[in-house]
Amino acid sequence: MPTIQSAREDFPILSRTIHDKPLIYFDNAATTQKPRAVVEKIVNGYYDVNANVHRGVHFLSQLATEAHENARKTVQGFLNARRSHEIVLTRGTTEAINLVASSFADACMSAGDEVIVSVMEHHSNIVPWQLQAARKGITLKVIPMNDRGELDMEAYRELFSERTRLVSVTHVSNVLGTVNPVKEIIGEAHRRDVPVLIDGAQAVPHIRVDVQDLDADFYAFSAHKIYGPTGIGVLYGKEEWLDRIPPYQGGGEMIATVSFEQTTFNELPYKFEAGTPDYIGSTALAEALNYVSRLGIEAIAAHEHELLQYAVKGLQSIEGIRFFGQSEKKSSVVSFLVGDIHHYDMGMLLDRLGIAVRTGHHCAQPLMQRLGIEGTVRASFAFYNTKAEVETFVESVERVLKMFDK
Ligand code: PLP
Image (cartoon, rainbow, N blue to C red):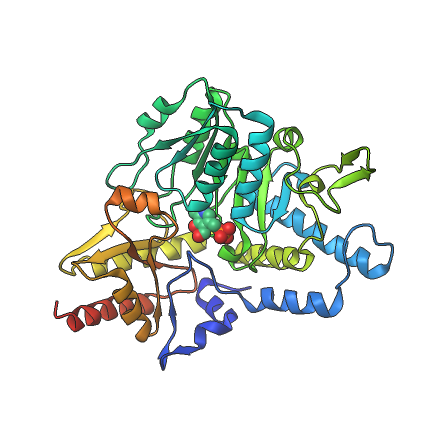
């Protein structure tokens, strides 16, 4: 049974060096490292059970199909979805949102209709809607935030009109760390009969998500941000909505019958899964979710919160530091700038000291415009990070400042 303290040993990459310094990996919001169990699942999947899934009568195909469908059930359990066919496997959060944007707009939107998003969205939850805006003549309305990085709920309520067809907001901001009150956001929308999509890319790795309790209509996340592989992710959708909207892509698997005259579509979730699925990736995703469940998401959250507080405490004595995102409810992300030092310079010099942080606009340029900056330095923590690493990080930021004579 892994514990937070012992789990670090499950991640071989964490013991490597970078520029002759021990790696301190604080870029977890971009992607997380993978435990041995996940990597082995992939390797053993290809060595032992590789065969294309569904429709195969032979032993290996059935074994691979069973593993793939069991993985779907693991995701169902993790999100507490009511039915396993409400779990659509996608390439990631981005594809999941594009799927909803395209299919929902086709079925339920026409020129003049409106989608509400927030000012702190990742480009993945802005551009798919803009593509539909150009195609269908729909409009985006934007929930503003206060200076702490919290959504303005009063303004949100005022954005609704009789043309509002969907609300699409992030659960947790990848820049500010803000944990948005999504249950309340969904409740407000439902009172007006408007469905809600939640971008859960930054939430699922850090907090318990129960899609039934939230009453989300759609919920998206990516495996690679929760210790799973790249190239696979999840769209949860309520059965009633998945039934209502048309397929996103055409191809094998998503059909029931095909003739040149007429094609009929497969049942859920296959209607949305055209082509050979990533049946090895799905089992690795399930392995990652089981790993997180064994550690306990509450234990993960508590440790990460401690790291966050420790980092903020260490950094706040630095003269000229500005933090972005000081919400009451916040996940383990620290975005900051110091004086007039460019975020790239800070990031590059920290890298020379073995510390991986992300710099730039973090795929949230409208948020940067709201903050009046070009980018930030972002340190994001996972359960395998330690207080000792945070101490080294704070000392390293101070060292960088000395290099700039600050
Ligand atoms: N949404 C948020 C809030 C994110 O942080 C990210 C990735 O950084 C995405 C969406 C896109 O995820 P992916 O690139 O895995 O599709």
